[in-house]
Image (cartoon, rainbow, N blue to C red; front, side, top):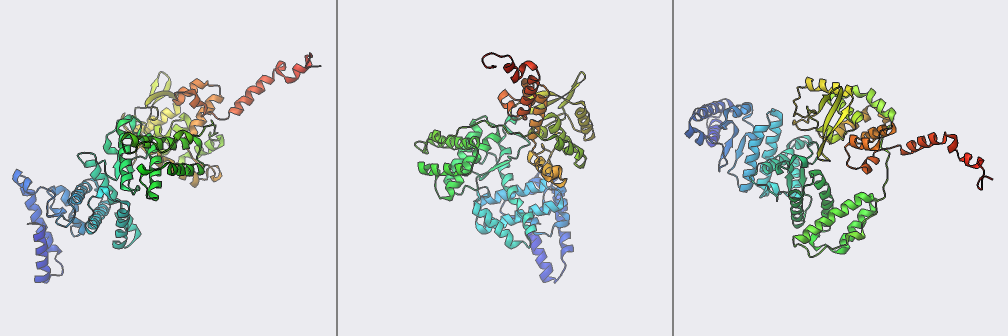
Length: 530
């Protein structure tokens, strides 16, 4: 008994026996088959016979050898996404990718509605790949992705249904990339989780989960980009965020070349000059422009070192901009802080606690998002926090207020957080995303009309606020540096705002002394006082 026999039985019932409702009879057929599977799975020979594997056959999910899993689909056996026909004229690579993704979806998605959407989306992707003769889903070109979206437009009755099915494409590409025996460096999208990078190079709260090369439409340019990024990840010890940040500048340059139909190794001095002048016209600050210039220069040097080019097509030093140090006052005004604190009860508990770490301790938001249950401790009468600084790749230990310590102890107990568990987690149990926090806080400020609706929440401003408050209260620059976790005082100086206020205060105290008055010199007489 198999699915083709089931189809023949259904045709017999409906055409030969003229039964309009054959579901009851088909259910009996399925029950007999499922009972047989459970009996056979008790022996080694039976397990081998019923093994769920990719072959030139039709797979029916209710006949899955794991009957506990199969019975989760018991009420939906009549849907098309229960039937997977691997006899179709489609590339074997695509069949393997669909089969791998099908298994992952059945294991991962337990909620019926979400599972139905993912399976139906995967079924649509399989149909599209068969119709369009796609050779490899991981190497889908941008025009093919757009064609798949158009395919969903034609085969769905609403935009919302299309948006429910479309995520199956990304899920398929991610599943195949993550489960491959060897890393598929030629895939058009890389999922960084697969690279198994050391923890000190990855920010678990960051937004860089994948890198897409799909937008680079010229295959040769895409290959150079992939080789360069592979080199950066494999050879350098830089953090992923730093590597991807620099690579994005290179990627934008390659997109510009692709728009003109040009291959980067054929790039002339005039073409590089034209692109850099376009960058200059965008009024990018000097520091950012130099970073873009450095990234492009390193990319070209990589191409030269690999033998793809003879020499750099331009002189980087001709374009380097002089950076003039500028101090930006970013401290949050005291009245805004007071208003935020007065409305803090309107936020969920985890967002309240996260905000308090910004306001009272001045942590980076990446540090707040990756705090763990063992971060807080007491040393005699003082409360302390231990923070891993992702940017600095080291820990720092600083004192905190007794109030924050007690609040977090209650939070930890209430949520049963272990010593190595993240305090604040995303929906998948990982570290809270910095981008998610920022969006939620900005929405909160808009919805609650903070500072009359003019306040734009930026988490890093609170580091400036804490640094300025300490310095203004007489804390030495060295102590502020240690509290913030900087390596150099020059960096700390950029965080201290209201320096004119500090100068004015010292000047006022100085000139209060009668002997320091400018008029005192005139009263003393002499050559300048006559």
